[in-house]
Image 1 (cartoon, rainbow, N blue to C red):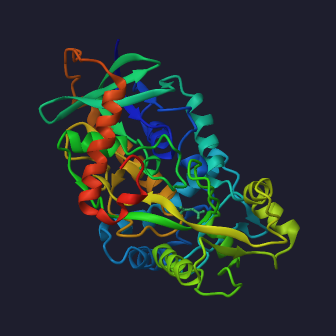
Image 2 (cartoon, rainbow, N blue to C red; image 1 turned 90 degrees about the vertical axis):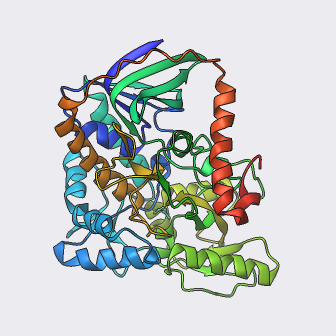
Length: 433
Ligand code: SIN
């Protein structure tokens, strides 16, 4: 089956939805989602969205981001991130995003490696609220069509110009031809045994980039979140215990009940200390203690975490939460400029599958949703400016020896092989490896 559109957006998380919303209304847009529309990491994000506390905070926000990233960040992109944070949070407020508030306005919390409180949030479900807010806007747009359960297997291309994507939907091959293609295909956690990510997120965007000689960057930068709920069930996605729990004062203790680390150091540092502590104490996990906080506060500020822990037999107001690190975020990805433009013509990449360089070697807490907002809007505006000069490339539908499973395995293999070349040490963390 062949389908034609102006813009194809691969992915329905924040970067896919927000880019579509920032494209002109006279463009035809098709969005595809590998699973259900909201089966994305955005909907799982708990902590919040970082934002500069006014222009006077931009320099400090940039410095915090660079320091957490071990100064491996792209400085220009990081400055853009901080400078454009405020306008994007304002836009979300205008869309009706229900951020938590105090009598003075937005409520700002703290997370690791931020010098000040600069994270806006909605309880511990910021990502879910964001996904729902954006989806509501998208569903009111007549020019946007969403195909659920539609997997991208490869891009369509002519020379070094992208012409859409080859997909599969309910067993049927669909070639979606587009003037411009946006890769917003999300993260890599589905390839890890132990990850906080949606299982269906298996690095598809980066794998397809590698296969088509599109430039990628920083494949070695993988973030392990310090505090995922610990249990022995390896087949489950790991449930995140948000860094904002430590931001609100939660304490890490070892299995003997002793504190061992400053909880608000950068994520990679806290993770390292936890692994060390687990080794030294011969325990498979440590604990996050919030028992000194009032139960009503915990229920109201962290309702999802409170309920989920209760389902797992832990009343967090009475006993510490068993936690251990798990794969959480990929700082590397498809190399892009500050408009999300990749090394292939007519192909953009936004969000976790892209690498703007803002995160350096270790992402500062709550900068992921912000990066997706800032750069997908910039990219959409560039597409709006340029698309009238981009012709639809006429391609014959590739006649494939069509085999969905073969393509999926091939994509996984291509990504895993490239990853293991630069991060041999995490080989045992990967599934089927
Ligand atoms: C968290 O709530 O700890 C996750 C937020 C993030 O990944 O920045």
